[in-house]
Image 1 (cartoon, rainbow, N blue to C red):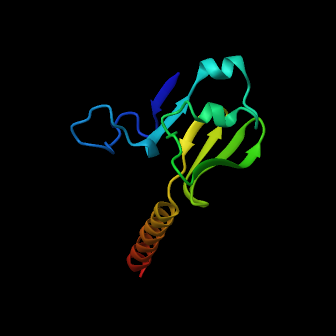
Image 2 (spheres, rainbow, N blue to C red; image 1 turned 90 degrees about the vertical axis):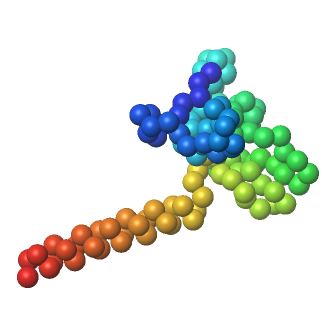
Length: 131
């Protein structure tokens, strides 16, 4: 059973809960893999939700909430949505047994816009220096 603080191992992940709670981690920068479960049974569409329920990403669904497999490419990739009142509120993916939380669309678009702005400024700077 492993909980890996993933993307930037040299930097501790930012806290998402109360600042005084040292066990709180940012799940957007976390990967989870349960080697014991995977050693007993390979993932399939029949057991992937059980596997997901063992992760820190899982919260018991309340009224009107559910977890749904929306994409599967057995045995390597599964995409799971957490839905509330039939609307997706979070997306998770399982890739070769490791579970990750997908970033929100707004965060992806913001990052792409920031990268575009950076490259555009760099191109203008190079153009001005060449003139």
